[in-house]
Image (cartoon, rainbow, N blue to C red; front, side, top):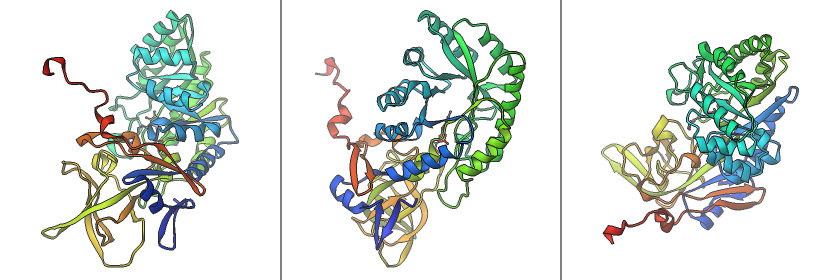
Length: 418
Ligand code: LLP
């Protein structure tokens, strides 16, 4: 995270001291570095420059429209999983012919929206979905471009909640049925088969499972091509991991080289759907110490960000680095860093060694750019926190802090209660 560095004792995002932003916008807030976002995209996308490819940023990782705009400007497409994500992508200027749409539960109105928008393709996840897309396209007298998302039954060796390519997972069409579904798709007048897709999981820190998935897809592409079904796009999904603590994931260059080698000049355009690797280490969560307290031998640091703001530690037991916004010397303590939510599962870090701190101190929760804000909620009626983007020496609020009125904006007191 070299765009988040100390200058003397002050943590800075690019050229802006983090405490300066905190003083202006209040805490907690998410903070992103534009330079990090751009360099991560460039590193990923350029790693594939020797082959025909399309990098479709996975919107779910961080869906702020400013972030989407940054990637769109650099030629990214988008991987969306809902009408809402499609709407955001189009608003941010992503070209529809660079948008792929995945997801096991696409709604009829979402499918219609995507057909009207003219997206590149639907990654179809079930026979019934195929039928529905075909019917809806037919009603519009249009053709829908599709790929089938196959489930290659590969163990990506990641947290069970974020592994998606095993046959016990709900995603995709199993290998056994895929060819038959392609045959059915081919017989449908309003369906154009253009691709094949898979996504095996997230935070994968080894190239092995990706190569294995590609082998499986390659085998199917060859089989399909032989019987006259032309596959132009091979979508390998996302999933490349990042360093949160001590993980040592492959650099995008190594990842790309392994895939390009396995692809072995197969005449397809390779689609990638990276999310975390582009945004994870381009963002932090800035939070303030509210209280410190002792319970027997246990030390707690209560901060103003909760599991509603960042759910990853609570949901996946994931590690997020913690750094002081202002470095100070002093004794260290081993503490649980917990939020204000009324749940014992509300923590940001457990048994973490940090410099002893006091109310008012600011902490940076590192590697929070992916699946941070996008998974946040209003639980405990906490207004959602702002998002701030730094570019060079400037910062800009790209989502305002919600107000109490925002919390009840769509609610009403039932007539019979008035
Ligand atoms: N494509 C598809 C079809 C996906 O389902 C996902 C992520 C991606 C691409 C992007 O994966 P990435 O490159 O970001 O690993 N909330 C979890 C991660 C859930 C990932 C869901 N699908 C977390 O915070 O770790």
